[in-house]
Image (cartoon, rainbow, N blue to C red; front, top):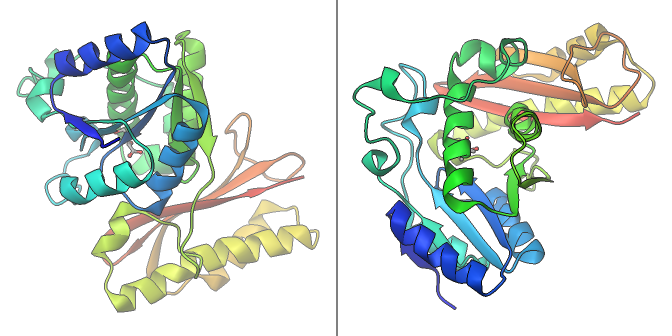
Amino acid sequence: MSVVVVNKIDELRNLIKDFRKQDKTIALVPTMGCLHNGHKSLMEKAHSIADVTIISVFVNPIQFCPGEDYDKYPRTLQNDIEVAESAGVSVIFAPSVSEMYPNLNKFSDITMVVPPYELTDIMCGKSRVGHFDGVETVVTKLFNIVQPDYACFGMKDIQQLFLIKKMVKDLNMPVEIVPCPLVREENGLALSSRNKYLSDDEKVKALTISKSLFAIKESFKLGIKDTKKLFDVGLTNLDKNVELEYLEFVDFDTFQKVDDIKSNTICAIAARVGDVRLIDNVILEV
Ligand code: PAF
């Protein structure tokens, strides 16, 4: 069956009404498009757990901070349709900005969903102030529009995944969040829509990001539990032209900072290669 592309909320709701009449379960994969194999693995997971897979393709303006890449973020809907179709997606919801935010010109008019400050004043939230408010707001809107049984999110955006799981729990949203493993290129580079911006030379430098994380994981396996020492291992492996934004160790269940690893811990990094900001992480399992 070929994928249906809809741009209007009412149109999508009518399709969903029909699916529900047929007792079909629905899995949603929210995306900003420029779909790669990482997204494909989310869509395939969705397809394997529900009768109908719906993806959203929407570059959400309110999660970009001033000076970020909102205008140049790659928009590749034609290719996205092909990728989605090959992964068994039934419907692509690709709304315009005005369909999602009729009052965007009056930004303060939008009701926002805001995660706890303590969980956003670290890692990506620290430099991208307000980013997760924008993410939670659009994800809440998508959940309200689609009312899916499941929603699949990738573990590359590990802080986003943690905050969305918490939001769903705190606000009693009737949807099961399905975390999906981070997908890498064969050489170790974490797949990201922003990899498109990298030149060949920058790609080589970017590779040292995953290399640092793998070196940390190896040292951890060899018995180093002190995160200060593990931090130094990471730094030693990072190309000197890669600008480190953060390299943090946080508890897998609480997202609190860890000094001495005693339970499953996320080691997460954000770094800039030229103008391109990349993130990656590994889980240090106890
Ligand atoms: O992870 C993303 O691509 C975005 O943050 C999301 C979840 C689609 C919300 O715009």
